[in-house]
Amino acid sequence: MNMKKKRRSFEAGHFRKFLLIVDESQEADCALYYAASRIQRSSGSLVMLYMIVPQEFQHWINVRQQQVEEETTKAKALFRMLRRKLNLAGFEDVASEDVIREGAKGEEIRKLIDEDEDIAVLVLGASTDPAGPGPLVASLAAGTAVASFPIPVTIVPGTLDLEDIQALA
Image (cartoon, rainbow, N blue to C red; front, side, top):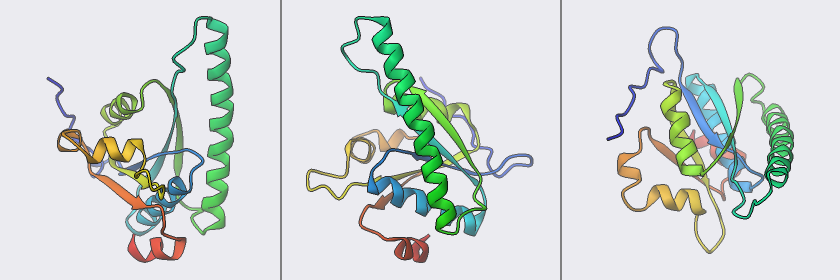
């Protein structure tokens, strides 16, 4: 049985962290701005998580190693771009940390939350695609996963612009 760790984000020496799963989608930008707005209004910091999902067909170690190196380079560039977006939108005072994980998204997100007792909110952007809100949002919002999730999940509609987000956050 998986025991939930107590969140310590409001105890002395700790502070609340908002976890954001990053990629290059428009909905990730909406989630980024929402989290930054919440942090500006109520304090805290941002943890940006980039997931390297292993390819299924990796018979050679060099193929896997090359994929990890390429994805790590891509992640670092994405973190820089997201920080520039935050600065341009007036969120230059929002502290952030970058995390790169390799593995299954759901498992690695839960592991990171378990490891960092200050992570208090997961912020996700919902896709505007007619096919659905995106696989991560769908998996967390449906079934039993959401009932046993260790922290609140905030889902930000991908259709909101920065002004709308700032009015809501």
